[in-house]
Length: 208
Figure (cartoon, rainbow, N blue to C red):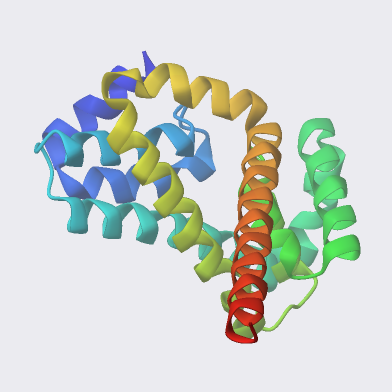
């Protein structure tokens, strides 16, 4: 149902739908961000949308949502804080976001992108804690670019399986991220060791 709604928006609004749906995700549209970004990638791969504007609109949508959350926290956080904390569900996410902030500092913004709902709450908490906008932007926007690129590329490969893949990532995203990070780290370590081995071999051969 949610995926059909997204396709309907895109059919009616084109590229603007990718931007608007990601922004409106703040108010509870039942469409995971992962599904929106991967749909953009899938439609671009199929030739329905042009890849560059589709990617730009999805990335701007994520950045705008994060900036909006930060701005609310920065300028109205004190007034809204008690009300948010009185709501069990929202209050729990705010506490979790504050824990991430205390433990990882600005990197909590990057980490929260991989965690449903926390990606909306953490910018708010950063604003409420009076993080300077320049520092917020330094963590938020590059992270949004990389996050968007990853899911946009995934979408270009999975095609009409976007909904199933998005649901899986939405549920187990942090574990998938950890697995990908471990695989990437292992790959680079392997490349480094292999490169050193070749350098040693060349050095020995030159001295023979």
